[in-house]
Length: 301
Image (tube, rainbow, N blue to C red; front, side, top):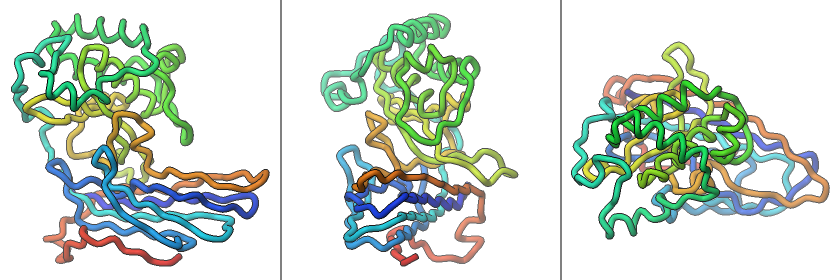
């Protein structure tokens, strides 16, 4: 499938502020699961400088820095992405040690995956949930991942919470509801309690063909030897295929934040507005357009 994504983020300040360097992770990944065909970023007011690089966890990041004082900051991104994974289960788990729970990665792999195995603020409630689902799945790893995804989606209510970091697994279970990022963190903790490496993913999803308007989304990926990182969306209760577009992934949610930055201003408050549209489009062969994914456009607004 081909998607065009238009994402506008506006910060309005109650008075003049100085902007600290801003880290932007709005450029979609380009890998074996999705192909970036076009991307542009418009920043207003224009930054004094910009650099692009690959972060510690392999995410593309754009650092912007500013001079003077501003009353607003607007970032507008546009991307065209082809999603490639039509079957989320087109894999074979190559390591026998990962076929049944709890899993055990070989030492060299486990060392590389250490940040994705480490539990923070361990929750006995999520351990109990994971153990129960693992038992119902007969200890089979893949069956567990599917069952856990479906269980979280069906047993917890969904809520919209546009701002703020994810809640802890214990908080989400106690409340009986959560935003997509809360459910992703709960899923990750359950997986890690069974020895599975998991990471947080931020990105977009297609809600429906007739519903192009969307909002930023979050899910989780689990590492299986022979399959690599595989996505599971506990908000929707499904394995991730070609209706999701990933921006960034990290062992900690903070490392996958699409826009990260602060400001300085005495007594100044800020307001956030977003406008996001994800819609299917024809492929470049149908539109006779060039591939411009390698270039990042900067236009003044």
